[in-house]
Length: 174
Image 1: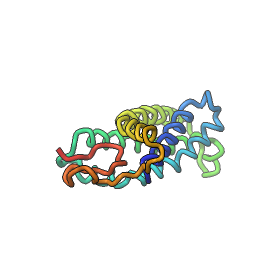
Image 2: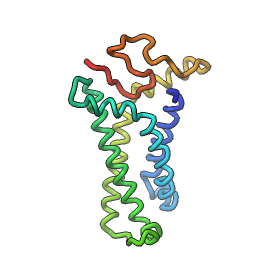
Image 3: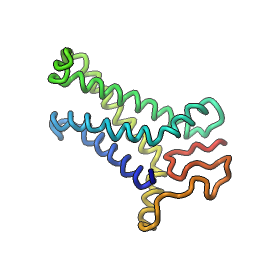
Image 4: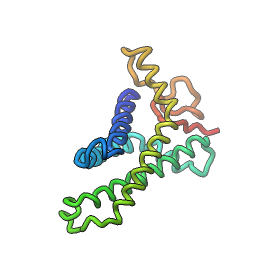
């Protein structure tokens, strides 16, 4: 997937999270649908970045840059909060809960509120940690819109410090 396509995917996820974050503005029905729709681009985002996740996890206690370690911790917290907000979101929808033979217990409302706030906070932090990558992709799109957005992964770097040009965070060993 090219950097341009990844940026579009990431901005889509960000926009859906931002829109779903305030059900007072969207209304409950749209809020619920945005939450369900968010599952697909979030999973695609995880799949697209899976190679980086696997490398970072395997090297977490080794010699990797601090920013990569922080990134992995934030991404893990974001993943847990997304699972929490999704499951609790399903539990607070009365029609869905009853269709599953469950009752939408009032316990799930505070869980949903806390996990949704955590998801927004971790999404913003995730975006901030990737800000340099985002601005780099946008800069390349603006300066050379007709140039291909894929660049060779190791074109101008040594094998010891290179990373894919489309990687969202530095993983260089230092």
